[in-house]
Length: 551
Image 1 (spheres, helix red, strand yellow):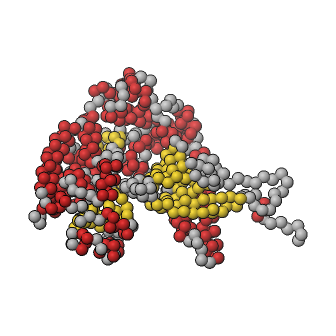
Image 2 (cartoon, rainbow, N blue to C red; image 1 turned 180 degrees about the vertical axis):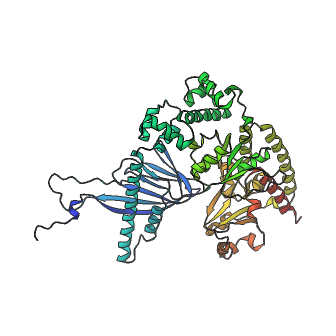
């Protein structure tokens, strides 16, 4: 019996320990959190959106994202001010086992903590949930809870190791999907059939057959579509000469581009008419409203639901198809191809949000990216109008609307409300927001020129149309509350608004002057929150009626 040895001593792997765990909340005053630790850092995103910047690399973060930073990394966690981040920071340390190793045996490295590369997992809600539980019970009241924390911590490590193994296996396993992704990401480079076949792990001749089965196109057709559609995008944006565009998309000169372009479109690049794109697809409802205003019905709208924004004064859509954002990228591509889409209009952040890769969509049609949060609705309209060659129509509509704005402002400025501070509060199931320059805030503060709370005014001066809202705690109400309150309540997933009662029955709420003077107005979400030209115009009319009805 003296020769019995512990099985554990033979594993030769280091031991993992949780060094510490922190909850990180971002605010408009502290939009950036710097990270520099001497151990491995796991960042888990519980809610909100933002980016992690490290050296020259940027990682887009959203709820469920996980990022593992090597020890001694210098990184910055930067929030999206409209959807502030809540993240957990877990410090992971390793140590060698106490038992001495047999002669000639080396300690095995930690796959989690010894990797010198940043490891990013876009959506791992199970890991985030474990990290959150670990934080909630970070001060265990009993030894049983302490042991449970140890189990949860090692479950996190186990899930990370499994994800790493799956990632490495997928990256090393030859497949047709990998070859298509390679083609989509490198279409501007010189690519041979042999390269693609090698990535797919099949012979050159068999590759063409399989590629056609997967995509419906031959490899050459697929490559040509990617290049010509990218050339169309550059022509629409006016990005460079024809020769420069040819070089950017992978053709040796403008003559070769012209030849390929004419094969696909029947026209030369120099005579390509953007207005010929009559079959347009849009991602999300607001951009569909912009197109309808311009007299062009979208052929396809990719949306969260088939509910359509009110089209007062416009011809309602007759033949427009809806695709749910819950559909797979392959399903979306299939419908767009079957509908013969000629142009896709979308915001990059929405493409990523719904798992739609621009490089994958480009084989269907050129993509015009219209940034959502980086500009206001008027600029959205102008950019979309430019893409479909209807700028004159957009400017005519805007000129009429601006006259309506001036008349509305003149009426409201003659009322007593002109000297008051107006606060726009939005109550969601999980947060309380004060709105700024977008949605109903555009009409109240920009169209009518009414006064926002001082803190909101400061943010609007800094961020302009990009300032959507700021989250606050209920205890901060007094710092933002004006003499009039406009309140919108979002229901929870079951349609209940009972969560708002916690606000309305609180001492913080009932001590507000506007509440005591009965200067609180409840806003209908469908009437006051949409952000597109049609809805904004209707909101202007409602706002004038709201503030002048008692005069």
